[in-house]
Each structure stands twice: as structure tokens, then as C-alpha cells.
Length: 236
Image (cartoon, rainbow, N blue to C red; front, side):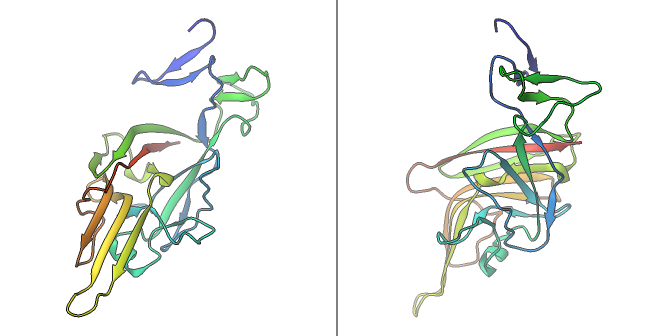
């Protein structure tokens, strides 16, 4: 860089760079923990906020959006019996990441504050309530069956995924004699395995005559499908 300040983390990734006008993100509020299936976190894909989600503390379950195309809101999975049996999280903990620019005001005391070129908007401040660390950046391509294991030094209850990266459609056809019932899943999901402190990242299609489970193996899509996602740790 020419003039200014650039701060890197221990992995060599840029925390902020004064030559860029992109704002850092932070957790403005504490997580919201909601019991039950089909949670509505008031999510919008057009928002500048980033929704992070996971099952409630010490629980196992899958995070994904589901529902009808006629829905005016986005609901996290478990709205049907088949989605619940599939393994949708029964109770969700979620939190929004906000851009610091436009949400953080100048403070006092000790720390670092970096302003935009307009001299008033804050791009980065060390004086914020809560931050998060990006632990993994991934891309699901066609069929994906990836296992992410929590590294040492983190509480699994503080690990989240970008909830908007995951959505699926679970279909069920009772069938007609002589044909039996038919189950199908199409999409992607993040399955939190609390006992083993790992996340199974899945994308693909599954078609079978028996109930499908979120921990199962996803088969290939028809065509090329890609989706990016983040795994982060909430920091105090």
C-alpha cells in the first residue's frame, strides 16, 4: 500500500485497510435464542446485515431456510413433520452482523477508530460490544459433503454459519399402489453435531423411499450449483 494503515490478523488476513472504503462487520446485539421449529428471524437477502445462525446451546440440528415461494418471510427449517424428522434444529440461536459504518459512533477512552475519507463515518472501531472471527470460508459446488471440525480453544456454542447460505426443499409423495411413498430433498444445509463438535456441510439432492436424515450423504445436483458460506466464532 502507499499511505495509510493496514492491520492483519495472525493468519495474514486483513482486518482493515484505510485504502478501502468497505466497512468491518460486528455484532451489535446479543444472540436471540428462540424455542421450537420454523423460526422467523426477519431475514432479507437484500439487507446489508448478515444473519448468522446455529441450534440452541448444546443441541444438535440442521440450519436451513425452507418454505413456500408464496411466503413473505423466510423461516428456518422444521415447518413440516418431514423437515423435523429430517433433523431441522428444534430451537435456533441467531444474531445479525452489522457494518460498523453507519452504526458505530465515535467513543472515548482507549482503542483505535478509523474514519472513512469523509472524516465522519467510522470504518473500524475497537470499542464495540462484540466481534466475530471468521474460522472458515467455504463454497458448496454441485454435491458437497464436507465435515468441519471445531479447532481447540473455542466454545462450540459460539460457532455460527451464515444462515442465508442454506436453503432446501423437502418433498414427500405418499404414492399409489403398487408404488410406495417417496421422499426427496433438494438444496443445502448445515448440520451441527454437538456431541462431536463438528458441522456437516451438505449440498445436493437425495431421493429415496424412506425418511431422509440431515446427516446422510448428499448426491449430485443436475447441473452446476455453487453457494458460498462462512463459519464464524462469536467473540466477547
